[in-house]
Length: 91
Image (cartoon, rainbow, N blue to C red; front, top):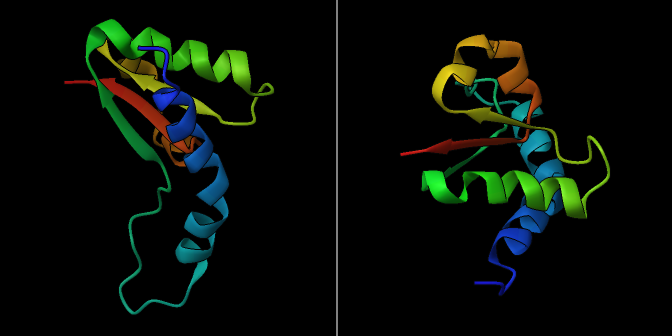
């Protein structure tokens, strides 16, 4: 604990987000699903830690994210998922 694994992963996602956009916009014969989200699957006990790390270390909206868990997931739209580079969920 406290070794920076979550923060390192988030920095990697932020640092490579332009590559995901470029790939999405490339001329492919079979266009991929229009979503550039990184799916983070964590135990329920650490889900709030992911949110806290994003809120603590990044400017507001620097890494938009959605939490797909429990009742919250019922209100999430396809557009919100497509616009968020990170989706947090549990097993």
